[in-house]
Amino acid sequence: QVQLVESGGGLVRTGESLRLSCLFSGGIFSDHPVGWYRQAPGKEREFVAAISRSGIANYADSVKDRFTLSRDNAKNTAYLEMNSLKSEDTAIYYCAADKYLVNSASDYWGRGTQVTVSS
Image 1: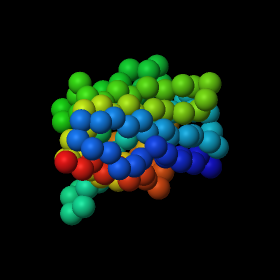
Image 2: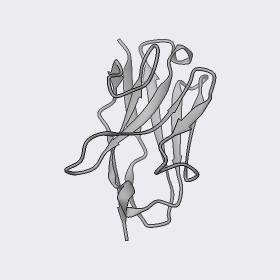
Image 3: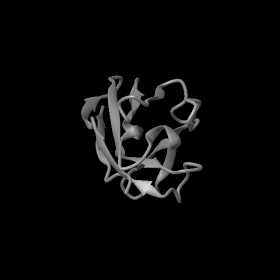
Image 4: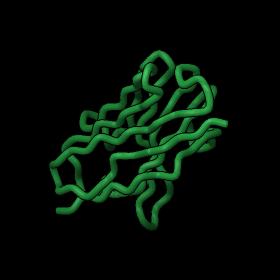
């Protein structure tokens, strides 16, 4: 059974950076697209970024040019580098994976990691 474990969240100030990690186990990581979603208090879960098996990433407009998603297939890990953080980036960040396409109905989800950006 595929399992995803997020790490790297924390409390930072506006303009600072964080790197989130998503450790994949229980399957063949390189066979799975991987992505990140986030959910802020009182809001619905929203797409942040996703990366294909071949390493092509796409981003939500709200994070484009600030966030970078990458994957290291040798380490079974995806990384979300978040720069120039804003208060509106405060949310629980969830890693998702799927055999075919990462979306809100993806097969596998982590438990999430909290990111808090203070002004």
